[in-house]
Image: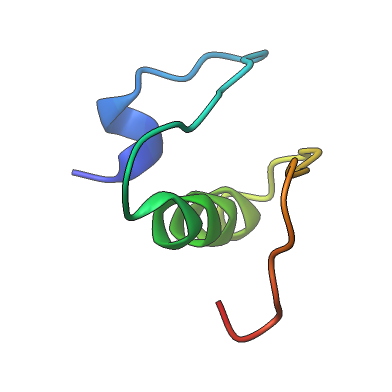
Length: 53
């Protein structure tokens, strides 16, 4: 099962990631999955996120 499927994302969704670990990985993986599905999105952070993350 893909992340977007597990989250039950519909046409429009707002997602907030909080917690102690794995946010950057989840953020990147979800973006990759949505790109492969040719979906449009806006991604932003409130902290620094480097290209290697």
